[in-house]
Image 1 (cartoon, rainbow, N blue to C red):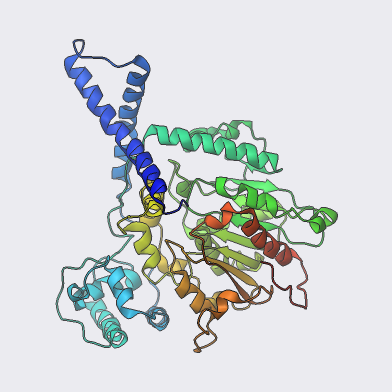
Image 2 (tube, rainbow, N blue to C red):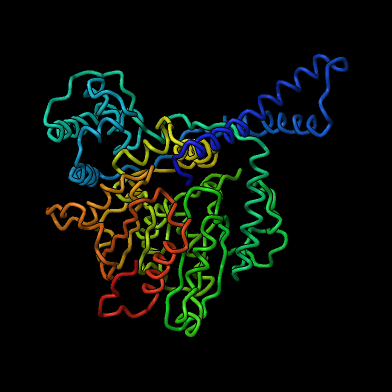
Length: 503
């Protein structure tokens, strides 16, 4: 993630304008040439060919895909009534700023525009998994509205206001065009990633070669790699596990350009004298192509993803892992924890910039999908991530918040490290840190949890005050802090004494 300086703002705006407007200009030029040929002025042939290819890409691939992405989501089965009420109560119990909570689930609308019917519409989507409610649902939704009034400390006005709630799996899937040139850049970065991963002794387990054209940009490594994934849809990079006394690591990346930002971090896990003497810690790094700026099929449903990861782990004989994930990867980590098939395989966990904790708060959904970007990093997030076709479809049609929430009770019996960035532009890290540091109903001492030493027992929080989302991977020093935690967690028998500070 870039910073917020003026030069960075100008740079990212220039990139966006260039990548976004190549196709419209190309289509305009091709139209003019078609109308005036052969009398019109002609540009050099290589630019003309580029314009024709960009126009064809826009008309034949991008626009049809954009239409296809609008198909309705297949929502999960609704929870039983008592479980829905319990989930609603759990959500309200962790809301500390009720006005912020309501305002930003309604896209930053004025509170005066949010009335009782608006609130019922929001909760109908959130807890009943549908866009509209009938007479049988009204009593339950009225109860939720009453409890919201208690939380606000005031009555909601009757009727419907002009506020529009944020319902990401019902709303239109919004995307912005990025040119064929952008996908050439993705191809180059992917090639660099492949070379770097091979340099660090990772092997790609590819899809069958007959599916070479299922991912765009195309990946020549698919034709060159000998290893094939045992899963139907999921590719991954594998570094063999040779240690006899340590657990291997499963890593799940976040939304972005694949594994490129994580290569040095993954290699750093084994940069330790003890791992050299004892044998190497194995690493499997899952690739999630729908959120990696590729044109490919839709993201897998949670049970499918868990089954495929289970197949991969079993293929290598791994029956216990250290689970490490970043950002969107924390959603898949949550699914692995909740699945009866995979929960026993998950040992200690390291969650970096997790989006799954307090997911019922509006911050992640609002900041990622509908915040109007102003600063350089916000423009980078909005155009390159939020408006990418694969990312937008994944969040808009396969992302169901109630399945994706990770609660403190889910990890209370595990050794878990949560890494938070103080300037995170997506996650409300102050709220997440306070929630994790809270003991029972007792609020944590202000800011105290940010200064705690890492102990390697129970729940640890690593706080990086000056970092933005994903910037922890930009620094070798910060990556080493995470790598030390992972190496300590990988020891099969928990140590009985404190590990002390690792920062």
